[in-house]
Image (cartoon, rainbow, N blue to C red):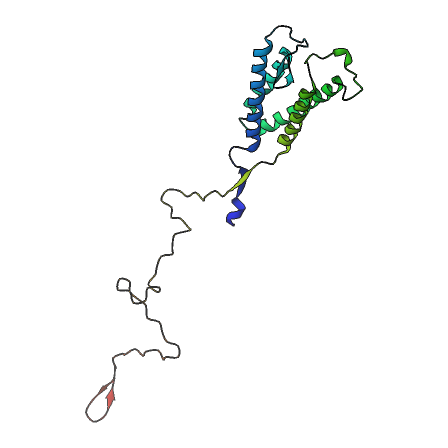
Length: 211
């Protein structure tokens, strides 16, 4: 069996999607904390005239940002959880972004007009949320960076490695070796040596042969 048949494809360490999840988590966590510094915790769903980097916020809006940031940091622990966080961003911030477009009048029809504007959304918030939803989609479908692992062949202690072990030399292989006797190789076509046997016949005087 060839070595390539044992090769396995695995994810190569820390994934880019985990880096994106951590960065988004840090940004939203910082935005939410700084927003609480500006708004405090009173008038939780009120339309306060408070801006953080141009984004309109209120305590409820800040809470959404803090929760999103904490989820991002926690999900960065693994590739699978980071992709799940991407789907959450796509769904939640996508819906909030579309709702904000209805509130600000970019989309004329607003079936949720009776809810008012509890997150104190403005146009800058809408584009931030829609961009976050798009980034979440990228995170969810981003291909993983992978590597190919070829495990080594494990052997028992004392067992020679078949990749480096050479066959033992025999007497027929060591021509001219002084330690191992060599065997003569008979030549083809040569007559077999005749065995010398003592004769049973004796010659006596007179030329007569007797047994």
